[in-house]
Length: 121
Image 1 (cartoon, rainbow, N blue to C red):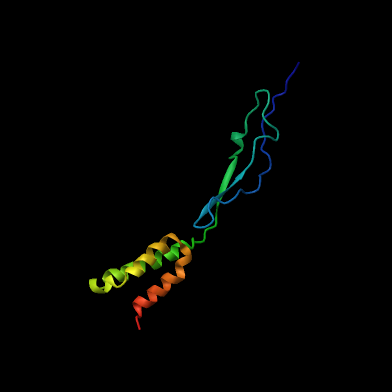
Image 2 (cartoon, rainbow, N blue to C red):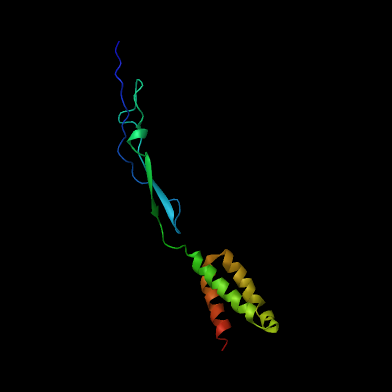
């Protein structure tokens, strides 16, 4: 019996996979397999034909929490520059900031606080 050597060949590229992140810059992978045809009877694999995957960037927009982090940092900086007696009046502000850093939905409340501190009248 005579066996033919069959070198492997790549399949078509499969669609890009899901992005690794929903925001802030993720990666999607495009893949193909060495199955068209698969190597047989001592034939070469596909490694000499190029890579079996490639990537591209995706969801490059900033995550919404970054704005919150900037606001919280800004308010914290403002509070740290106030005289100690005035800072003591802002314990509620600090509590809200701690909660806001854990719950981005409080962004509006944090912005109102920032306004109140900067323009108390």
